[in-house]
Length: 222
Ligand SMILES: [Zn+2]
View 1 (cartoon, rainbow, N blue to C red):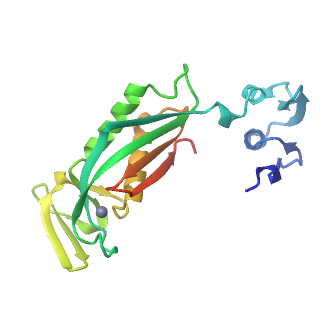
View 2 (cartoon, rainbow, N blue to C red):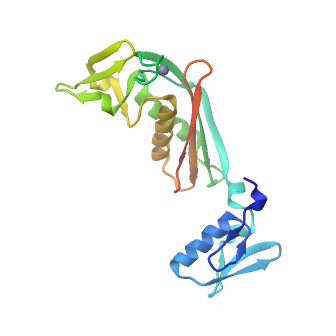
View 3 (cartoon, rainbow, N blue to C red):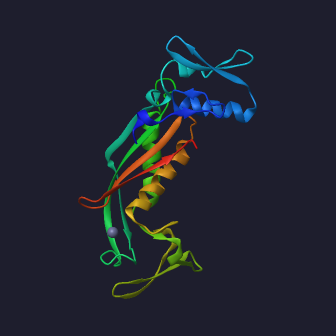
């Protein structure tokens, strides 16, 4: 997309300089607050009828330039897992992988930090520990049995599998256990646990063996 071609216009026909301005204008319209668009020096601001200039931060820098990204990558951020993908010719056999994970957390710094690094690493390790040395499996192949066991049934390329295994050795996710879905699940779990309103997104890059990796973003603020 050619960014120069993008024009942000509010519902009164005012041309605004950024998407951030437009979001504020839409919010004011939603709240029924009347405003006018003014230029102060080199900055375009929205001024309400009672004199409030919104938002103060628009005057300084665009929001996306104020956001910072921290990267958490460490040889300890890895885990092993088993899985199967019935619809894939090669991966429909039960097999395992060793994965390395790199995590990015983006957000607006609070006290000069997006999130305290040690805390972020503890959260990431906690999430990975839940998956480590488990059979990661889509819920639709799993049937609960009594006595803390489950039956996992699927049809692979050479025929039907039926496994009775302890429930504690499985980790159930919503979709098929592709590297894309697993990385997206991990990003979601990390975002849930960080739970700070300055966080924009959590991105997880997960490798699955040699030369295969996927990245997933979870947006923390909708
Ligand atoms: Zn695989």
